[in-house]
Image (cartoon, rainbow, N blue to C red; front, side):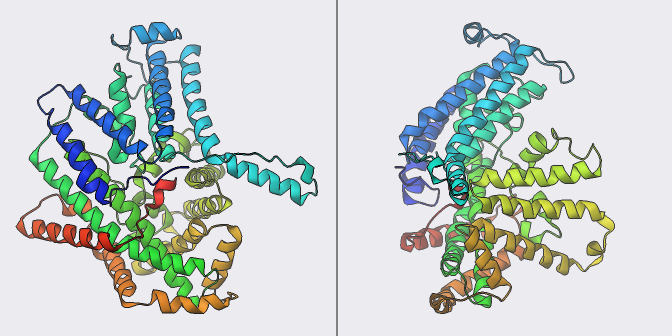
Length: 499
């Protein structure tokens, strides 16, 4: 059974793991870059193995296979021993427009199939088995059920590091990146603890140069601390109390109309501040280690359409899906109908990537259908002539309703909650108790502060570009308030740790 993961907003991470990791890392600041990469590998595996050491060999295995596959692609040589023996020699550069041999095609196929097979087994085995058994029971042939004595446990962060590793072999195959000669450098890319278990999902071509050469500066470190402090405050002061409101509302099953919307919007705030806070802290930790990661959120609830929302929400995932799924499917190059199909298919798969549940598929389908509809009407449709606040409000309402399927434990629960949002809920006796819990001053203040930050506050990325005395004072105050509040909170999940 898996233990509790080491979250960034915990005392064990902030006061023990992080200081020790930074001390070991900066002790080698005059040493060759490779030694610091080895420290990052060691700390990454320690961070990952905190919850369940048994899954560390799985990450190591996929790392080695992808690294060997990239060398086979670059050398066009399928003799594994020869590839391994000459790994430290020069690696061929592939022409982006050049044809690929059978050996190279076999290598990229092996990498993709292996990664997706591992991901599929751990993430979807239980879901597939449950769906199959439910189907045969509904058909009255219970004897066809497949009952197993074990349940597959999902490895922490497997969706994130699998996508990152796949981006490496695909980039090498496309000729957009050079294969790494040194296994330690590639293992550092996969296992670096700031982005290991919940992203951002960084393309290898974006980070390759920094793996081999990066600078450690006081400016980067100071901005990294600012990212960490702001992320911690968003997580502890906004996401966690909004999450408690959402939990109470969703556990009620079918709450009253106002309570249902309060809970659904609270969940929208929770998942945004939870995930953007993690991304802020990951970016900050990267800066403290000399890395510059990509921006992952850009005020998504200010979006004027669902298309605009996906330019702002989880940017690293939407970019990955665009570059490695939407474009290979044909993108918008094969006519309008194919474009609509591709948009819906990509979002359905994006929903399934989040978890093995029909709820996630429906969530992806809602977004895919909206993307296709917006593409059909174009930028000159009647919706785009509405006032800006109306566009933002409508988009947010669509996103909130879609989040219901993301949050609810199963499809019947999601449909019951949607009926409450529409004012047609059944309202069990327990639902009458919701208001007495969620309308307490602490939760109301946190909720309204979350709204102000979501729609009116500057982005962390922009606010931290320059840090003077006033901003430094704000950061110190927020950090210590967050630490004090964190000691009183027993509720401290990171939603995306389960994906």
